[in-house]
Length: 115
Length: 114
Image 1 (tube, one colour):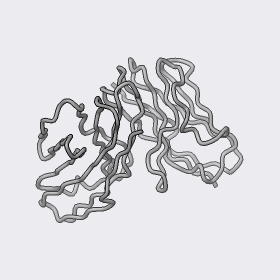
Image 2 (tube, rainbow over the protein chains, first blue to last red):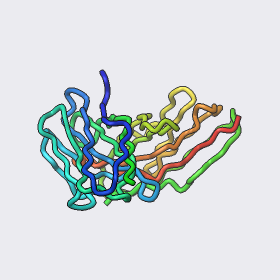
Image 3 (cartoon, chains in turn orange, blue):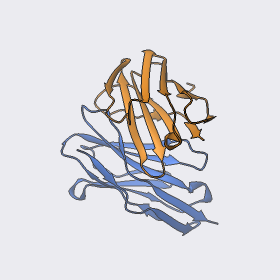
Image 4 (cartoon, rainbow over the protein chains, first blue to last red):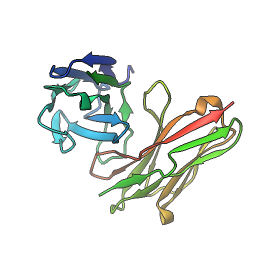
């Protein structure tokens, strides 16, 4: 089991550029989550999918953020245009089952710096 | 609504001392799940334990133990005979039955002094 795989590990981009973060969940996991970690706000849920369908995107900060899950093995989080305040560590997590009673496995995160 | 409070922002102890990390939660649901995660300096989030609301038995895993008390809405984590490798940020988290959202506390930064 390779775990949840995120790419890139680090991303430095200029303000105004488009940024795409990628995630491959654990095979067989049917839920996928995108979290953002900052010093000010801690770990906050941006969006999650169940069976590739977005269930709750209330945490997406604004229209500049979008997420897709075209199939069970891949998801993207896109920021366009990026701003310095988007600098954070973005985590992807996946789990199996429903009802909250199964563990969440997190990827290693993508550290995004917008200059 | 659900909320997790970790009142201890930072803790420092000398190696081999015992240390307890506090976690208090709020939820209106009767079925819920509590978690602890460790975030070492390398940055990844490492799963430590999951507890459901119907199981109040304390759990011990090596030097780690967890005390779950529904009466006080607490799920505290104790490290016995701490080691330098235990230095990390520890997060407590909560999810409710039927809602997959995992709500994290603000974390406790634990430093073990050699």
